Length: 211
Image 1: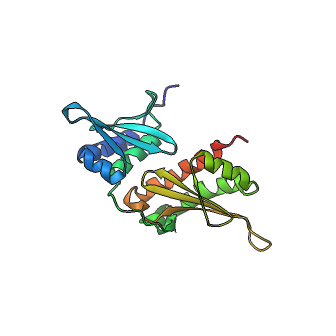
Image 2: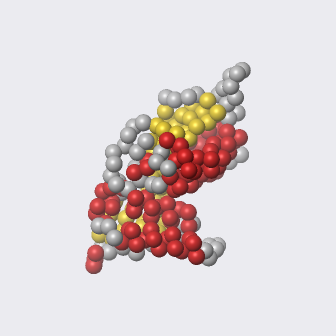
Image 3: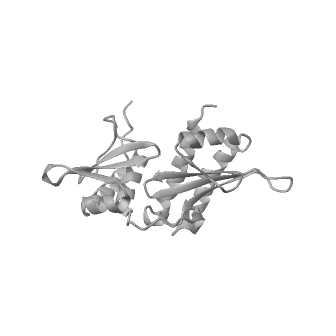
């Protein structure tokens, strides 16, 4: 099925992201983002980026994105996220400390949208069936965390880590879920993209286990 035509705003966003990619050295981009760069002839090459259990090939310097193993281009959101990740990554080490989205740089600006888009769907789907959540998390390659009643860490991108933590609640508090990021996440994507990334992770978790 063919994709819908991109809007002028989407085309402009892609053009800016591709220009940023072209302006940097490919080897440095790969080192900062923790990904593999395969140089070809005439200074061209391919950057290979794992993303939520799939692998994508990003041509350098053109910035065209394809899912490995097929000739398909991903949707606009995935394409832009991957280009922004490669263009924004600065090689900062993982903080190994979880923070709420609002604690990230500019997180407060997008916190309302993030909170409405990300946590409620997870709570509706899994609050009463945490075993099913465990199955979904494992299907996406999540690693168990010793937080809450059930928690998993996801390496969504090579240097962007997110955690999903469920709390069962009790007589006084209702069940709750929190989606957190490693405190270094702002060195790899802007807050607007991290909000979108949270929604992508949630969507993948909801699709991972059939109802």
